[in-house]
Length: 390
Image (cartoon, rainbow, N blue to C red; front, side, top):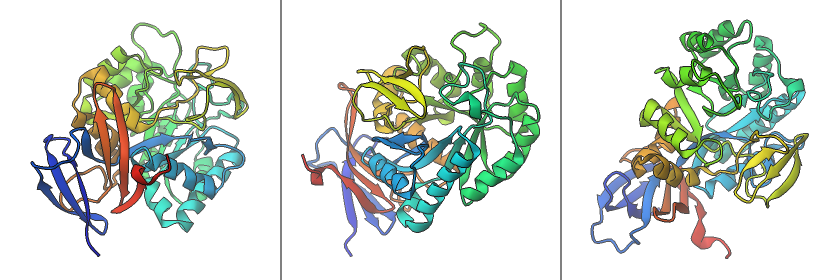
């Protein structure tokens, strides 16, 4: 079988290159200075999204979730350049969360493409703050303290695939829970928390490694200093995931967070929910009344609080470049290489011998647009815009 060949500009070097792929590996990268490829066409590592609640009308936390929903979410994300992702299971009843986890595990068990595409499961809750603001859109009646037996039941339902768990470290017994959880290899994330500042430091010492959507899932008004956002921002051992859609964080905050954490410890996420891609309007979603605005903002109707995002990770790349002044390669690092490093997976590397998880995209800086033309996962083309009906 002839090797697959892709052509586009290299993100770090800016010149056209030809990449040859055999099987699931990049076998050759060769300069193509005389290439006739369009100047806006770039060859980039595939994106890795560690927080996806749903997409394109499909809800990973809905009562009717099944393996088919998981598969369709993955395919929808592939059209946006995402080659691997973490389906995210949010606060619900114990039975509902286990049902969702089993559906994801079954999709992975029966479909090798899903098994590869799911880099791990992110469990966001139910061990979070019950307070308004920090709780976000998570239902108060299902918020509860950390419980090791419940986590083991979750991990059993997931077939051992839980890789990230977001919790609030102020709960009694949370530090022992964090130590035990980190000892299993799960990435412990701080999020949806109302913790006093000193509790953040203790959580990091116990093994917490990530701040989930830093600056969101918090009170609308905070003490100027100290507070739990400053403490997480200053913690050198914490990575920070951020939602760069222009709604969750103002551009100046994104710029400050990226400068404080540095490109090497910042991860772009979508936090996409099922309403992503739907028409503006009011919706009943997971028992909540939410409003999807013309600008893509999803909020709890009648409150200042957000309820997830309609962002896709490809759209976050030009936004973070515009907000912070980082380069294209730095933006892609935050959306591909960094989440791969956090999860300990082989992805996000554009070099000979690397796994062929790639996308070809038109990047138009002036229009703040990154339009995915082709997505390749483990050497296989899974999305090609030229073959889609128009």
